Image (cartoon, rainbow, N blue to C red):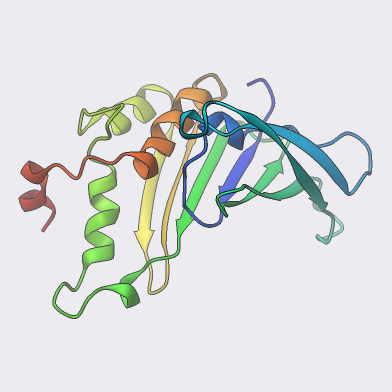
Length: 185
């Protein structure tokens, strides 16, 4: 990717390909445009057209472009284009926080937050994501609040495609490897 962008996912029910999450802001002032997205392997790699709405209600001095769409699985996405950005950034907010913890398992949401960083089906190395982000001039973190758990990161533009692929796999296929449970409890 040669253009700066930031993608913010509002609800993680990730079953579409990470490539689906990347789109360029529309040219011109048309408030609604279409974007072609790949629905991923669960849907036979098929593509579909989704309406993308430009969000224009913003402060006068804000030069960024904002777009919104909703994927067939309910995932809501906001794309923020900032031509002054030096890195590509991404985030996912999962609608599950400490208020959702069972009484007999306090801290479960926070525990899950930590476990997602410890390997996925496609990228099983428990330190792989952190090493990749560091090698790529990036950083990442997460936090658990009362009603949501938020995961986020930023990375050099040249590494953004792989960073998003690794990040999306947190939500598609986390390992939750038993040998790291003790470390995280």
